[in-house]
Amino acid sequence: MAALFGRRLRRGATTTAVAAAAIAALSASQAPGAIPSDTDTDTGSNAQAADATPPPGTPVSGNSPYYTELPPLTTPDTPGTSIDLPAITGPAEAGIPATVLAAYQQAEQALRESKPGCNLPWQLLAAIGKVESGQARGGRVDAFGTTTSPILGPVLNGVGFANITDTDGGAYDGDTTHDRAVGPMQFIPSTWATWGQDANNDGRKDPNNIYDAALAAGQYLCAGNRDLSVDADLHEAILGYNHSQEYLNTVLSWFEYYKNGTHEVPDGTGVLPVGPGPGSPGPGTSPSPSPGPSTPAKPGPTPSKPGTSPSKPPTTGTPKPPGPGTGDPSTPAPDPVVARIEKTATGALSAVAGGAFGERPGVRAEDATGKPVAGVPVRFEIVGSTDASFSGGASAVTVETGADGTATAPALQAGEQTGEFTVRASVAVTGVDAVEYTASVTARQADALARTDDGELTAAPGAEFAGTVEVQATYGGVVAGGVAATAEITSADGATTAGPYFKDAAGNPLRSLSGLTTDANGILQLPKIYADDTAGTFLLRLQTEGGATLTIELKVVAAAA
Image 1 (cartoon, one colour):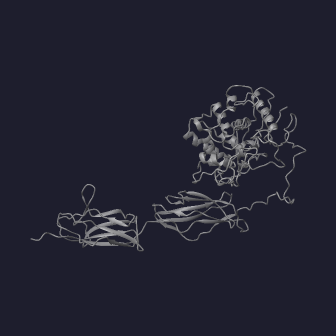
Image 2 (tube, one colour):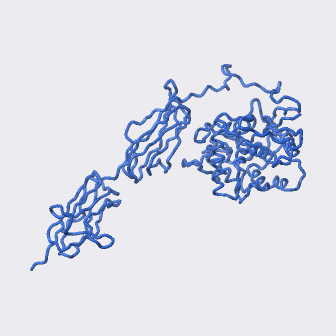
Image 3 (cartoon, helix red, strand yellow):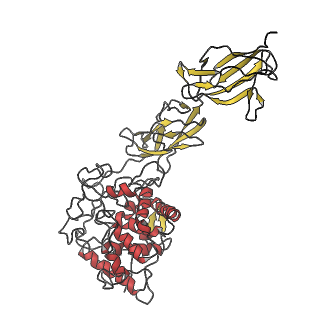
């Protein structure tokens, strides 16, 4: 009868034996991509991969613990029998949380364009994500891909794991003495500093965001011009992530499983492994002497024997978690549920082009009784045709609500484009409507214009006016740079068909100019003015955005007889 392997195995001697048995089953079935166990004496590419030198620097996870359970495998009863193929309604293990799956597939697409020779399949990222964090703890991420709580490996202080002194000042892992692996793909901070990516374009490289972490993992696996369709390169890449034959076997088992089929499940409903994965010790487990410097052994359940029912849990040695209301302090209280978000800013969101907005959009998250809900990620996003941005140039940011339930976006900075746009605030909670703020950017303005000199402007018929016309714009007594202005030359009765003129690019007479702009000091200098054969007094009218006007006389005087 078929034997079921890999149910919640923990890292250690027992795990290695079972992993080897599972791999042997794959090899016996001639499944595609089968991997020999670490006891294989083959001297071919697989053996070389096991001894391959990882990329320069510390492996990604710093040899943190990882989940070593295997996908559902059966020993073959007949030739050709292989891995159970997951169908759309198949085993729960074949389901990958929606946002996590989207991140893996987005990373594959990005690398297909930037590194086409790497041939990275998203199923490889899924396999590593399964082994490193159980697909972000069963998909506990918000709609934007950020984990709802940090995923941290153990302290890398040399006790059973690598010894890595703090490299990030505790910015990612909260530890200022030693490093810890961080996020769903378990990057240590020093490795993230080199390989971190901003795949969701929020202006941050966040190892706790599955989109950022998946692309960073893909970049790492593709390093050195590897072609992951070649077994030797594939094995070398995985060993570079964590240099362990057991790790290689486990990842390749999940890789094979996901290649044979998978399906999407809602976020938060993925299967959550139990065992020594990052930040998730199994119930009742405690460290025991380590068989090696990077493989601390932990006791685990005995795998099912052939002929036994895999659906029945062991009758001894498996403590049941306490139910709610039992008084056990380890039972967490249910998290408050967000029922709605409300605006906290009431003033108008407006600014002059190039200036800062006086108000900042914000929201308050409340439960059904109106009480504030803390720790809720709120996404603020700029929507519409505008070049305005949040501080730092981002068009979208995520801010968690504080103890009072409020979250306020960073300051808004107006660009040069005028008009209205929208700032939308939303939370990744079904049934909670987003709220929107209308923001507007107006053109720079001036309320006064004055000449910088007071010389008379005269010319003889057919001659050029001496000097130039230069004015300065101010607003509220302060110089007004970047203000739009127009200029027009007319006769006293308003006609523009004769008299002084400017010249266009072809040298033709032009008596009105638009698209003029004051410089940073509020100065506007007009082009040269020429006189035709008509004598008399003419008017040069300047006007700016905001209503400032200035009229200057131009005199064309014939020479005395």
